Image 1 (cartoon, rainbow, N blue to C red):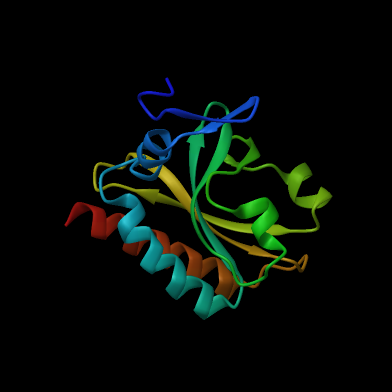
Image 2 (cartoon, one colour; image 1 turned 45 degrees about the vertical axis):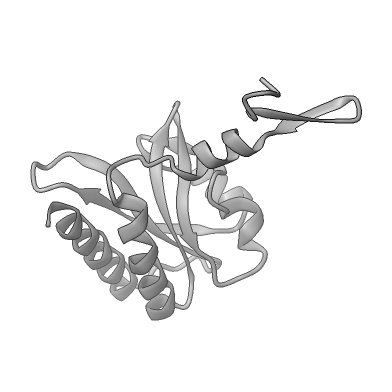
Length: 149
């Protein structure tokens, strides 16, 4: 595995090698999803002034596939590659309460109706204004339409 650059030996330990890192960077939950989502997440974070993420289902949890973070402390919980507990495909309410966060979510759907993930804005306040819900839903629809085009 060392020769294939999957792992790298450092003293008496192993860590991720260059090839494994490159493979991880090229992972896509759906073709062009990450590329298109990054721009949409930046626009959503600017409009809401809150951290925004693309979440996809992964082994019974939610995987943060991409993020536009507005607060440094959100990087611990919401950095790309991290996972979050889920409940019926949504951010688990217990997890949200434990971290004093509220996730306003909307599903990203293909024209076929298939859901491939969700966009969420993560707030530190317990209120979710209706305009926030509408803004997140619009971003999810825009991303779904862009994937179809």
